[in-house]
Image (cartoon, rainbow, N blue to C red; front, side):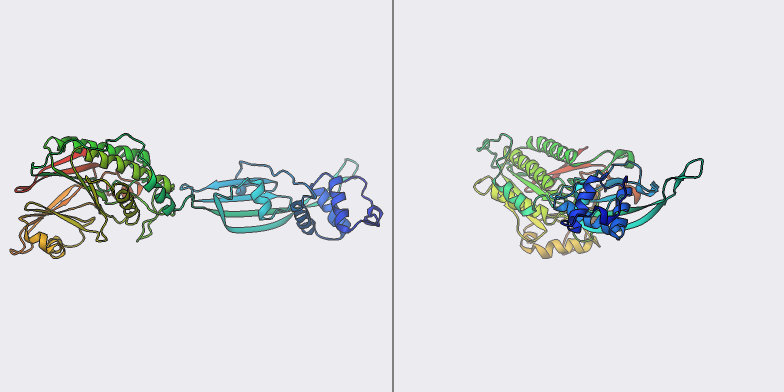
Length: 457
């Protein structure tokens, strides 16, 4: 800095030390290492003290900011100098900001320079450090000092962030209840067949809305929220087309069974807290699930009266409940649609002499589950001749026939195929035998289940 006169010579008797610092800083090159070193020497303090004081003055608007240069070189590869790097995690749920500068920055300065949207990101952790770098003196060929040795103070900041929830789930669901569907539908269905004796069960299981899968990684196809909703609608439409030929007098439509891959902003399973490959935009997920299920119920309603049954999975016990509560509210004045959101997670219905029960997973011995159907629904059991459990969870097509005891009779347990393809976790653990699809069944009041359709994807 030219004209390095003494502090006393440049200090006006009417100035405070702060006023002098502001004037000298603004007259200088504005925050260069040479200026900071000169001011530190002039005031008899360290460069860090000068930089901290300047930081407070910046907040008051009394001195300006120096531009922090953006640098694409990773911080670990930089020896010194100014730089800034913003990194987001693959799930976009966390992020980090790293800055290296020869000027002191506190957390507010860093957030301002990086243009961090504080309505989206919340600070989790803040770390700061500093070091001094000596710059050797330069001499000419005659040995005269051209530039004296200087010391540059360097500062390092690292801030980690969590993404804030963008919309509360209850608030989002409350808005769904008031939403009018964005598709055309008929308030009055066509004339129903009342005496066919046939019911149609449509049971799409394990759709896992918002699961993320990459074909290049799994070799089983891509999967995201858009693909999931398209597949869900296609499978229901195909099964409805097949089943409607038999003119059913009632349709049982199962909702839940891991319809949604995750139901929280953390993207983990509710019980096991397993980290999932998932789209983290939870309000968008629930809205998509709501709209496609509204469409599905209205399509079923165009064929026959509909009963919606809530059967939650291990991934969506809460979100599928909210969804069915919203469906119940939406159809509360519709005599052709009923929604069963009773607290018991297992459901059963009697159709003539056929008893069908739904649960998400058959765990343990099948004999115990045959007995459970009788124990949980004794009155229905006593009126039935044909008995079945329909369940999902295992992501593969399987049927198991058991006869627990002579007094209980036979119970057919059907493992329904999953709608979603495998993701990276399934691939790593060699759970790769699933073929995605969605199923439906035709029921007879005197012959039990007499037909099973599978819409493969």
